[in-house]
Length: 162
Image (tube, rainbow, N blue to C red):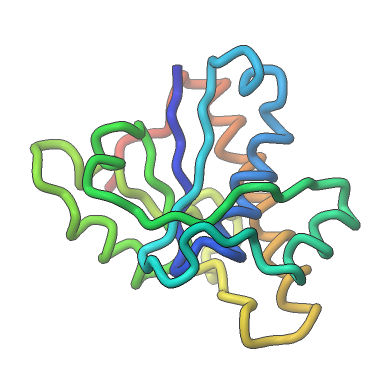
């Protein structure tokens, strides 16, 4: 079983969308329990809320159903998940700072590692922008999740972090 957690700042735009994209691409494996997917945010300001309406609407236009409710990333998530995939540098460092046991820091990786264009170092936060920002985020998430899933299929897991 692979346990994958997507993390952004508030868990209302990028990470719930990543959870939905990955869940859809790994549909059979998620349903069988082979892969477990979840999302969380560094902050707790949106805990319990659904994903941002703009993200849900943009995702729905692509056939994605974003249904998760926001929750905060907890230290025990670094033990419970095989991969904790962050959207940007800030969430990467904040997630790694929660590590308290050997090996936990190595579970935190940057999702843009699975985007082909090396100029893309972060999945941008679309919250304060217009509709094109949500479209761009979904484009990046679709590419990253497809590549990640391909690696999981080809190698049984992602390569070790550099």
